[in-house]
Structures are given as C-alpha cells and as structure tokens.
Image (cartoon, rainbow, N blue to C red):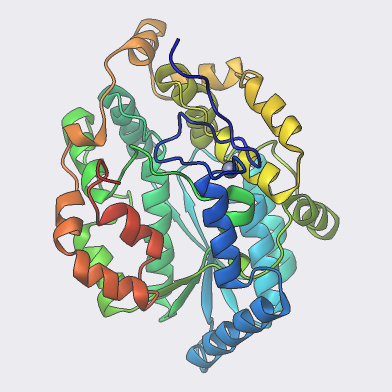
Length: 383
Ligand SMILES: [Zn+2]
C-alpha cells in the first residue's frame, strides 16, 4: 500500500511508532535515547556504582533513628523482588509495600511472602475491597478506554507514598530498568487520579471508599510538602532479568509466572486479551525491543516472538467474565464496541500543563520523575 515498513536495525521498533526517526545506519532515536541514558547514569560502570553508593549513603543518613529508611514497592514480579533483595544487600532498611487489587495470582502472593520473610523485611499492604475493585475495572471496560489496568498503577503509587508518609520515610525505590524495559515511546495513553474518578462516576455503581486514589491534592502533598523522593537504582547498575530470575529462584524459591506484568490477572488480561483484541495494541514490543537492544535476545529472535500471535488464555477470559458478572453478549459488546480515549474524560492534564514550570523544578530536585514532567506537563499531540 503506502511506503514499506521500516524496522530499526538494532531493536524492533518500526516506522509505525509515534515520533520515530532513523539515523544513517538505520538505528532509531529510541535506541539513541537509551544510549544517552546509559551515558548519563553511567549504567553498569564503576562510576555508576559509585554514584549509586552516594545515593544509598544519603538514604541511610536521612533514615537515621527511624525504623525504615526506604520503601520498596513489591508485586511478586522479577524487578521488584530483585530490588528488594538488593536494597537489603546494600545495607538499607526497606519497608516493602504492596497494593493488593485482589486479582493477584497465588504465585505472586507466595513470591512476596517468600522474599520478604527470608529477608526479614516488613510488609505494608493496602487491600482494596474486592467489590469496589471489580466495579472500577468494569467501569473502565464500559468506558471503552485502553487504560484498563491504570487504576492498579495509580493505587500502587499512592500506596507507596502512604507507606512512606506513615513511617516518615523520605525515599521510594522503584524497580524500573530502561535497559530491560526500554523507554516507551510517546503514546496516546494517559491516566491520572481524576481520570479514574470520572470514569468510575460515569460507569460505576458503588462509591469509591477503599481504593487508594491519588488525587491532585495528594500528589502535591507527597511530592511538594512531604518531599518524598523516587529513586531508580537499576538505572545505575548492570541489570539482567534472566540472571535476576535465576538468583531469585535459587535464593528464595521464588517462582516465575511467565511474562512481564503477568503476575496479576488484571494486568495479564489487559496485556494479553483486552489491548490486543480491542485496540490492536501489543505491549510486548517495548520489552522485546529492549531485549534486542541490550543483546539479551538477537534481533531476529525478538522479531520472531513479536510476529507470533499473543497467546490468549481462555481460562483468563472466563475468569474476567465471571468476576465482573459480564454475560458473553456484554463481553463481546465491550470488545467490539466504541473505543474512547482519555480525551473523552476529565483528567488533571490541563492543570499539569499549566503548572509546568513548577513540575520542572520538582523534577530537577528528583521529587517527581523526569518522565512525569515530559509526559504529563506537555500537550501530547505536539510531541
Ligand atoms: Zn531502535
């Protein structure tokens, strides 16, 4: 039809990706972005380790006299379990924090228990009422927006801040790695606490009582007034997911659940069923591109996996229908019905854009992630 699909010569991003450009060697700008981050954070080099050491010392200093010096969010997945073990190894005194959306697989619940108990780390958990959780998930499906699992992400972020605030902890450690996950390209996805509230108001039946939503007020409270900082230690060190998994299996009898973000049924449903069938969105792309880029898989292997269909788990679909009381008809209507986006609902986006100068200062002080500033404080279409 139109011009041929061009694929980056290093990773597997192609010309359909928003904002992509290629250099003379056919390497995409996202590969260059990762190279730049690697230089900036001196990832995996002695200098990177030294920089992280300085941050760790600062975290210890700030935590003197307190029961804990940092919060580590745990999901039972590879990255967060590994980070928690590392934090202990570095001599930190972490408090593990978990948001339970009541859709966990038993593997992930067990993983969290095994790792925290062997490390002797206390666990702070917020459990949402399961009826309320389902009501929120159901509203997102009826709204027809792609951000099905975003309530979990927001609630987890809020849970970590609440854990930190309760114990007067100044630092949150995040298990994100741009080496294994890549930098997700500018997309049309967006979510915040207002978005959840608006969708739930329009399509939900229950009142939001136990769901830990992050309102604009809370966001400012945690970042600006409590000055709780977020650190991503895996940005500084050599991080290999395979090796991390092996280490976790050997040390904690931790179990692999078969894929990135698959430890929880709601994220598994979003990634393997809802997004691909309704929106033709295949989120395996980001991690597969990162694997090819980082040399964990060959580019050909990564492309082969990407070009093979996503495995649909019929039991998972049945689980979702049953849990959310959706008849086959209702379910089909959701999958084939109208698609909407965050632009059709109320969000804090305009407010974040207006306050851009403030968030620039906060980002520079590590009080909000730089990625928040870039993604939330500029109009999406213009970037
Ligand atoms: Zn690339």
